Picture 1 (cartoon, rainbow, N blue to C red):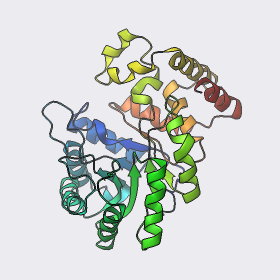
Picture 2 (cartoon, one colour):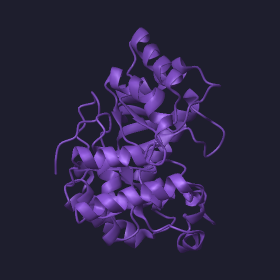
Picture 3 (cartoon, rainbow, N blue to C red):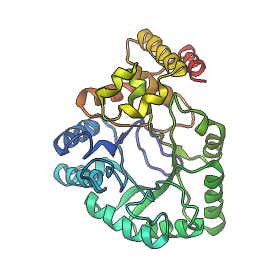
Length: 313
């Protein structure tokens, strides 16, 4: 598996991240363990989760994903083979990114993950009510204590991300080394227009979420009747329009050329973007994971990328 460094962090995260939002939601503990084993066996390393995953599922309270990952780490003994990323700030309660809340919440995540450190600790979303200095000073302290190795941001505007980087520089604090934005063939402008220039100027690693647009880019949702196939189906209804169908046709055309699949092509398109380090994608079965792994080996040529670019404008 090829080497992919996360920005200036020194962390080799590989070309794909496993999205842990499915653990304790659409897959149980046994299947989660099976997929994590297969992910690492393929030479991949980055596992991304959050303290709130997956509280939206009936009966869940949040922390289920971290708990499953922690049990797998303890049972498998593979902690030194993975880069562990989690997030804080989406709110198991209303703490946001306030210093005392982060200090308390990181201990909960470490306990659930059954580890003594988090490789990449990320602000899940911006907290305009808390001064950036307070948040970044808290993260800096956690790094000094050895509880966190690197920090990243998610769901920040370009202006606030640039401001946070400046605050770190001026105050001699550890800076964000990565950004986790929503970015895929269906959702391009939000990242490309403003965030991407900031990331490239600062040398940040980019690990986009919703890499397959909630499954739409796999090609399995092509009509409203298909939405009932999955618990995530309603999340792709907005893509069932002329532009969405144009994107699917382009994916089908490129997949046909490469004897591949739409999902592989969609991930390969992201990997062809110069600012992207490792797309985040989830799988609920071994076959889906195999598809994602194969995507990291697919290199699209210029005409294929141009076709996808034009279809998704």
